[in-house]
Image 1 (cartoon, rainbow over the protein chains, first blue to last red):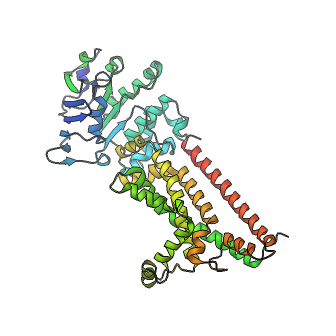
Image 2 (image 1 turned 90 degrees about the vertical axis):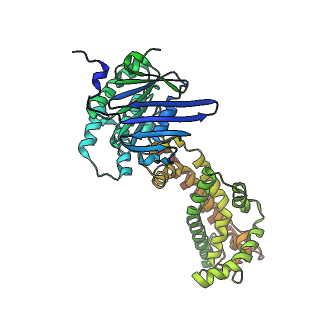
Image 3 (image 1 turned 30 degrees about the vertical axis):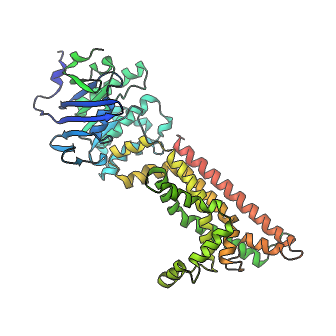
Length: 236
Length: 231
């Protein structure tokens, strides 16, 4: 039976992320409000719409001029109350467009990095689960410099997952890959949504790419949210 | 013909000790200053930058003189350190190490600073999202990525310390067994009629040590760079 995208988000879930931010970046003014729930929220819009700036603000890498960001009941940023939780305390996983694996560490140590920094004991079951889900077992002892683009992105996803994030941000994670590679990796993101059950914000400008993944779509254009809804918003 | 006298050996051993100690002691300060200059913008930054570079452009004798009037036995800083910590620099090998460390400092800072500036800061952002606070981020990402520059900086500092002459001899004189390094010993020998033959043996030792240091640091830097790029 075919499921509509809205069905993918469990019905019992309340709004978990509320974003209301303003930021001037040179001549560009960003002013975005949206809310998201579990499942995958796709932040969709053309290049230069401010998508990456928005998730950088959620991650804490970019400071809004004004506004409020709340995850679950945890205030991450509140300009008026002068709350700005530092990046490293937010526990928000981030998969960057270019992977950004640590070149001096093996794949295994890249995957372990978040656990080390969080001070958690080794969790063999979780590690094996993520490694199997992403098919990166044979890569564990290699260094990132020796990986293909697709392998690198899968490792980057694994690294973000193994830090046990409350929320996963994906910034055009497939942008550097060719079409065939994209089709290879997309199923992993679906498994991520359905099996790992980590809420995701997925940034993309490619409607075809995110149609399979989106539980919910937020359209961003010229620094403003122009629509929120389901996959019907995924038009060029 | 190329035999070293006991006094030569003493000078060689002293030179190595002075070069190693000055390099190792200068390293944490070098990393701190290099990081500060590479990463922070603050009032008076160009002044700090200039002061760090000063020993490179000042005549070494002037640096030695400044050390003498600062760290000498009867100079303010020197007297304080001697009375409260028992650290004496004047006419001791420790003073030679201080002079060498200060002369080598600009080269060390420059090499480390360049490698820190070359680091892709987006990797540090990635580490922060993974839960690394500033200290851990520095220790697990910044420092390892700067390692080739740190090795190069140590090598330059070691070589500079080994060759230091002017500041050292001005500050702590030329006392066999205490402050007479290879350079000072060669200088002393060449001042004596017929001493150039004896000096040749020390010259050869100096060439061998420098060459060995150069090869070792090249090898280490290649290994460190290779580690960063995949193999």
